[in-house]
Length: 410
Image 1 (cartoon, rainbow, N blue to C red):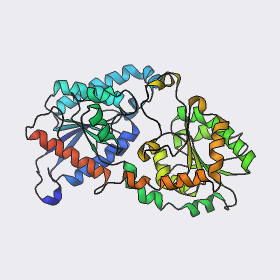
Image 2 (image 1 turned 90 degrees about the horizontal axis):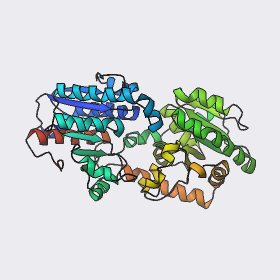
Image 3 (image 1 turned 90 degrees about the vertical axis):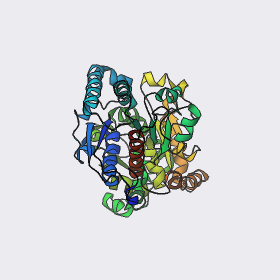
Image 4 (image 1 turned 180 degrees about the vertical axis):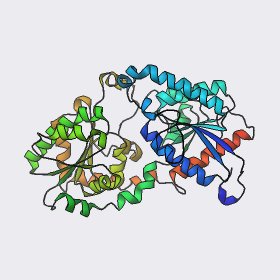
């Protein structure tokens, strides 16, 4: 199963069992399937769990991904019986399928119980985990505990392989963050066209507001964001505010912002418009998450905030990192100010935003640091999905040749 450019790849039929438990994992799975189909000269049969992105490549999911796509303890508990049933159904399907390799994708609360049970029933089938759990941030003992049932990890963040070596985890390869595949789209987004469409004439600072893509995130953050923007307007003068909203939270955002003193323009959160808004913005106020990497790649000065439910908040003492912001972790310095839980107040947010709306040392320092982001994430060769496909095929080949499973192929 060597790179097809060598001409030495096996053409035997290959069976791959994929398990994605959330929409972001489905997006990764869709790109992985496309890359596997390009990389492998023989026929591949797929089975498992996925969503629409994987379905676009002919993947037939055992059940709708909506059945298991939940986040946080308080969200999982009411649906726990159904999730448990889906876990056992998935394991039974994997055993019946008799795959050459199993790839679990993110969502460790769902995918790891499946991987453990598959390992018990199919001990000689290799298992690859696409997206490392955040063992470097909290519960580091999970790294070592993964070794008995995960043979190789595909890491999205460049510092993760070293973290797994340090923590005694499985073999781990940095395959690149999928956002790198969108770098040209981000850098070339048409900000002037968006400004014209929105009626922005360039006389006011543009503040981009990104309150999250989940209902719980928006509910916790949107009010304090509105209060912070009001403070900014009072101190710095009028600003133009734009909010890209994904469809399932758009109505909530419209309702929550109807009484804002500074009326935001709410646009569809298509990649083209979102990236154009990032390039247009003077600064951004964002919920913590993958969007901070998008902002960093776009070179947008930002302030990051987040609030979690009461259960997670009580576990903050377990955090082992100096930042929870992905962009800061990738850049290895706290470029974006982060205001979490009790620190996430309108006064604090406004105080951090104000210096970013003018030519200040704070703004210049952010811009200088953000320029390093593409180089931190970029792969020397290939794309993230192709790099991931290469590792999956290499692991499958290693185990089909009868190599020892324990410890994972190197």
